[in-house]
Image (cartoon, rainbow, N blue to C red):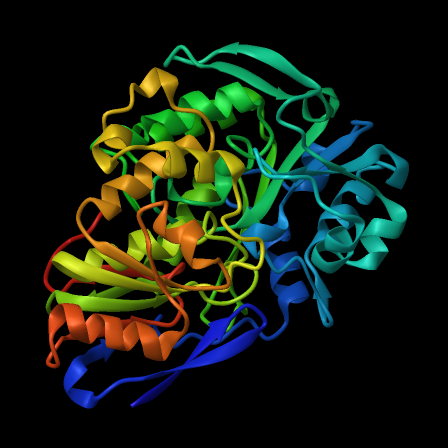
Amino acid sequence: MEIDLKYGRSHKQLKLDDKNLIGVLKLKESSGISDVIAAEKEALANPIGSKKLSEIAQGKKTACIVVSDYTRGCPYSRPDFNLLLPLIDELHSAGIKDEDIKFLVGTGAHRAHTEQENVDNFGKEIVDKYDIISHDCDKNNVSLGTLSTGNELLIDKVWVDADVKVISGLITTHYFGGFSGGRKGVLPGIVARETIRKNHSMIVNRDVDIAKTKGNPISDEMDEAAAKAGVNFLLNVVINDKKEIATIVAGDLDQAYEEGWRACRELYLVPFKEKADVVFACAGGYPKDVSLYQSQKTINNGKLVLKEGGTIVLISQCSEGIGSDTFAKWLAEASSLDELLNTDPTKIVVGGHTAVGNAKVLKRFDILVVSSIPKDELETRFYEHAEGIDQAVEWVRKKHGEDFRSYVMPQGGLIYPCPEGEVCSP
């Protein structure tokens, strides 16, 4: 069998004997919304658990709309729609002027957007007319006090100074936050590095898991931070396997978000029959495979279908290499995986949290990477390297034998594998 897999902005072919393939794990068939703007306007006119944005903004002077950074893949701007324009119309109808509307890119601890990335993600009509600011986790953050965990909520002043505060973005599964979207627009999106660090250091907690929203300390703290930050309105979308918008939710932060993540869970949950020796997990192409750092969701989703000691073959172009200097340094300087796993949580920094999380996976499974990252950069960081998919298949045969059994995950960063007959995280 030959299976087409996305690789950056191109494709690669995986060839497997039928005897080696248990199945291809992919999202349920789902059509995208045919008229996105009409659906969005309907959602804005009938918000979940909230007044209309135009009513909330009445009598206010300034607004801040948080937008996701390019790594999230939120389809803000496409040839036939722009998700941001109906939001702006709502603010206009309340009397807020263009010059008083700011877009704050929720970069978290990622780098700032380039001008071209702003155009590509938000549309030229937005870039030409509005102030777009990339959040800087090391500058211009002010304190809103301390959360119940003891973590100080240091947040972007642009957000604090706005009269109307709106969060937008994409909901997908997330390997330690439960789901992305919603409150993640605040934490980690627009908070200070130290606030992110303390939150993400809880990755060592056993209750941290994919698709788990309650009782997950990282997710619970994100909820509390967003409540304290004073979010007035939420607009989130869910996409299908073709990156088309399948669901739009708008309204109250908690109520609209819950409806959104439940729709995401319903679409992304994929049952599987048995555990495999190998999973060929594709990150899904650009922008989900821009770096090894961004490919962690795929790795963590892939592990769910494996027997102990199995192999994850990660297919991810990684045009930006490893993608985080801190992540790369922590992996390179660790003498062993146990050293990473035994890290004092108070010492875990942003980027280091991903190294610790990755060590959890590497301790149990081999990760064989098909990417543009040089062999020595991978092998000095506990990964295995393959020049291409054919070589990866040969590597797998040597380890697991000619009759190895495998799954293929063409959109590994999206799906939520769950054993048939089990109830996975709500």
